[in-house]
Amino acid sequence: MIKPFAFVLMPFSSEFDDIYKLGIKSAADEVGILAERVDEQTFSETILERIYRQIDVADMIIADMTGQNPNVFYEVGLCHSKNKLCVLLTQNTNDIPFDLKHHRHIVYGGKISELKSKLIDDLNWLKDEVGKKKSEIFAVTLKRCEGFLAKDDWRAVGEMDLELEIHNNGQSRSPEIEAIYFHTHKNWSFSQDSIDCSYNIGDKENTKRHFLKAPVARLSPGAWAPIKMAGKKTYWNKFKGSELQEKYIAKGVVILEIVTSEGNFKHLINLDVTFEGVPF
Picture (cartoon, rainbow, N blue to C red):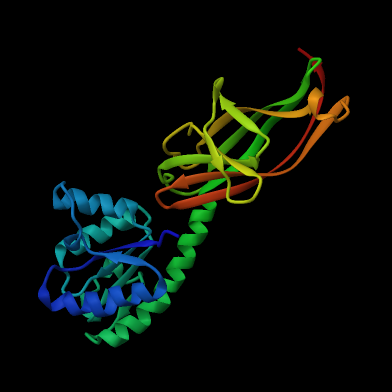
């Protein structure tokens, strides 16, 4: 499971090394959060470009305001403009400017053990908030599901046209969609735009995981995108001895899994479709 990412903003000074390693990073490790400063990362862009990029992708921000460092203040202002979840630290309340006094600060007076103890409580809360925000990012709705039964002298095949909609219900741009998987019973095959979908064995016995093309890379707040696919399942084969029925019903739960850099989002979809005799 991917850990939430906390980007740490603080002065680049040796006097803050123990505060970072023994206080901030140690607290994050105990909570199950990945905390990093920009100076311990490897990157090819400029340091400012890297900071901007890390602020964008971070689940939360931890910022030490001690000493009123102008770079840290500027970066925190940028974080607030992007509605990032922030926890602010300071050794001295006199370092909190008027414009930030309404934001909660952890005041630790230079005591690393006190910082770690207080920060663990805040990080546990932030981790829960990140989980809530992520669970609210994507919503999946069933827009259309139509089935018919294609028959000849040798077989009867249920054919289904399915349309789903992915919605971004969050307050910010969605994480980048890396893959979409559709989990069904192993007897189903699917296609998009008349091209067969690749698949492999699913997480559970007798299931398949079909690979679907993502309609977009990301969704803006309030935006949506459709996913259209066609499915097939053979219900009757003359050589298998079963009796041909006039209609067949597919009823059950399938899973649409959206894979992103910030974790996987699985959505349950209830299907109830009837396949009735439509000849070739």
